[in-house]
Image (cartoon, rainbow, N blue to C red):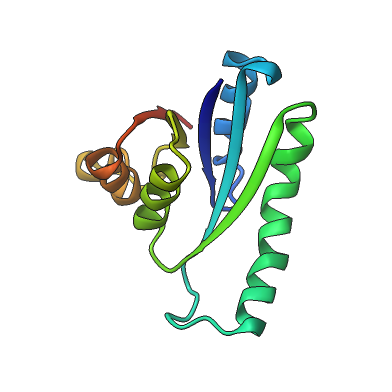
Length: 132
């Protein structure tokens, strides 16, 4: 069974990764982790900040979970640095594939985005980049 990680940022474009998962994988063939990273969190997170972030995460992951009915899904939350949190989550969970969308920024140097670039460089697994 493949382990797949899908980072979500709350944007509509990040749900493109969810659609690709549905196109490529049958629910019985994968274990799916949805990761939400709260970038603007305090470095030292207190209980209230964490509770607020968990509520926010629910708003981000619920649309994805609804689209993935029948799949085995776990949800995780990270703080501050998306690239590092994605790599950490992939490593800890022995992820086989990370599926994420490319950046919306324009220009050649921002073609896939800084977070995606970091993940590609530092992750121990395959990274699939979904176009918008």
